[in-house]
Each structure stands twice: as C-alpha cells, then as structure tokens.
Amino acid sequence: MTSSRLKKNVKNYSLILGIDTSCDDTSVGIVYKTRVLANAISSQIELHRKYGGVVPGLAKRLHTKRIDFVIEEAFKLASRIAKKLNLKEKITWQEIDAIAVTYGPGLAVALEVGIAKAKELAQKYSKPLIAVDHMEGHLLSPLVANAKGNAQIVLKRYDFPVLGLLISGGHTELVLMSDFGKYQIIGEKLDDAVGEAYDKVARMLGFGYPGAPVLTEMAKKGNPQKYKLPVPMAHHENLDFSYSGLKTAVYYFLKKLNDRGVVLDKKIIRDLSASFEYSAIKELQIKLAAALKIYQPKIVFAGGGVVASAKVRAGLRKISRKFTTPIYFPYNAKLYQDNAAMIAIAGYFKAQRGEFADLNKLDRNPRARINIKT
Image 1 (cartoon, one colour):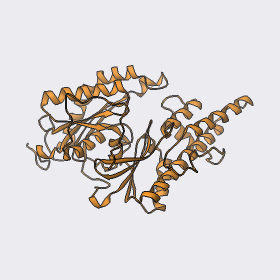
Image 2 (cartoon, helix red, strand yellow):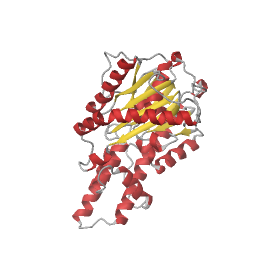
Image 3 (cartoon, one colour):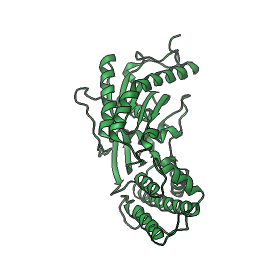
Image 4 (cartoon, rainbow, N blue to C red):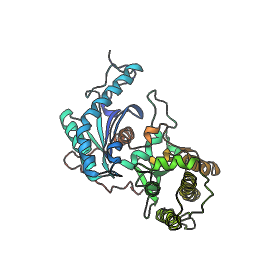
C-alpha cells in the first residue's frame, strides 16, 4: 500500500521527527504538519524520586540508554496510527523530511544526548536538522492537532498578536508573538518560577519528588482563604513575576507552627496547600490581566507543566473571559509535560521558514531564551 492522503513533499517538509531530552524525560515525536502521529515519552521520575530531584549525571545515562528504544517506539506508534487512518502503511526514515531537536534551555548533560543523536541520524539518513527552543515548543503546544487532524485552532495572519504564558518547572514568562518565529519576552521571573515555588513548598510539606502534583491534589480539599499568604508583585506595574517571597512566607509559617509544637495534620496541610495555590494563581491572573490591557492580543496561549493544574487553567480562563480574549491550552495532558511532539511541530513551522541548523555548529544552550525582538 502506498501513501494516500499523507502526501510526500520534501519541499514542504511536512513529516517531522522531534527529539527532546531537555530534562528527565526521553521523548521522540513524529508529526505530519501539526498532526501528532506519535509522542513517545520515557519518564525517569521513579529513578530520581529517591534523590528528591533530578540528578543530571543519572539523567544523561538514562537518556543514552533509552533513546534508541524511544525512537523505535515512536516509529511503531506513528505507523500504527498512519495505517489505522489510511494515511500510509508504514512510517520509515524514508518518509521523514527533517529532524527537530531541543537545543535548550535545559540540563546541559541531558540536552547533549538528544543533540548528539539528532546529528547522528541526520548524517546517517541525509536529513536536514532543525534546532528548537524548548519554550517555543511549549508556546506552540496549543496548536497541536490530534491524530485525526483535529485542532483547537489554526492560526491565521489576522490572529496576531498572540500572547503566550509559559509556566513550567523553571520558567514563568509572558511572550508576545507577532508571527511565527517573532517573539518578545515582555515579562519573566525575577527569582523563583511558579513551578519551582510549587516544588519547594511541596518539599516543605513532605510530599517528596515530584511534589507539585501532590500539592495540587491536597489543595482541592483545602480552604484557599484559611491562611493569608502574600501575592508577590501584586502592586508592581511591570509584568515580571516573583515567587520567592511566597515560598519564604510558607517557610516561616511552618517554622512558627513548629516552634509552637503544632503537629501538621491533614487539615492544616490541605488548607495551606490551597492557600499557597490561591496566591500563586492570583499573581498569574494579575500579570495576565495587565498584559492583556497593555498589549490587547487577539488570542492567549498557555503552556508548560503548571498548566496541568485544573485550578490554574480555571484561574486563567476567568481573566481571559473578563477581557473577552480566547485562551487555548494543549488539548492533551501529555502535551503539558516535556515532550517531543511539540518540538516536532515547532520544527515544522521553522522548516516552513527555511530555518535549518548547521550540523557542525549546532550545540546545546542550557540558558537559551525565546526572545527574538521584532
């Protein structure tokens, strides 16, 4: 069986394989334009849990050990979907038009595994290479279509400017997008990112690693008004974020309880989790509202691991409704976390602009910034 609806056109660079090893997930995705055919992810959480966080050297070894298997799994998944939808009998390297890989930001030793593999494969199969900023992947993740090609939104020229709110483990950024590839950071973290604050407060409460999802679950059963915690930067006119003060307030609150001999029970933990989350989300709401007022974008995109919280999404929707500006999140929970499907799709848009990497010059950039001023 030869290809039917999935047309092979090398000049259009439609079928992209993406690789992401930015932190502790080894991921390989295969997309046809913005349609996800495979998004294979091998998580390292269980192996890092006993250390209370990601151990860079261990992450590198596991990426190196697993990446070939994950690539093989991605081709199997893509072939299964393509055959099921009568797109193609099998997806092989012959059909792949280009390889996209995360070059940063992230853990240096982890990034180098994905880059080395992408270079090896690009050379072996004579494929062009695309270097993708990890945060650009999160920014464009709401554009991802499912295997049937159904997407929440397809951006047209009249949809710009788009405001992006990127809230992942180490990042809290407001990005103004005037077109594909034209980005400007208009607000960013001054100290802790919101995801870092979630993780650190979760650790204070004894939730272990990864603690943020546990904190979020505890908060569902707590009273967000029980403890009055500060909302950092609430009265600052700029669009920057700060979560260090909120984290410190929780630390001193717990210290005060400990000094008084108060034992943390489930009620205190739930109420404190809910109160922390209320303040954390309130700052996101305040800054989003300010950005909407100043820049008046047509659309808002929100991406990153913190978006996995239903309360975070509800809080952001509340602000978007107030300004009658539609907000879009990734359609699938796997797209909130680090994943290669979003990297492949960001790579697809870069390929359409002819932005390819020099195989001999491409290198990791752990502190890369999605900040291309227009």
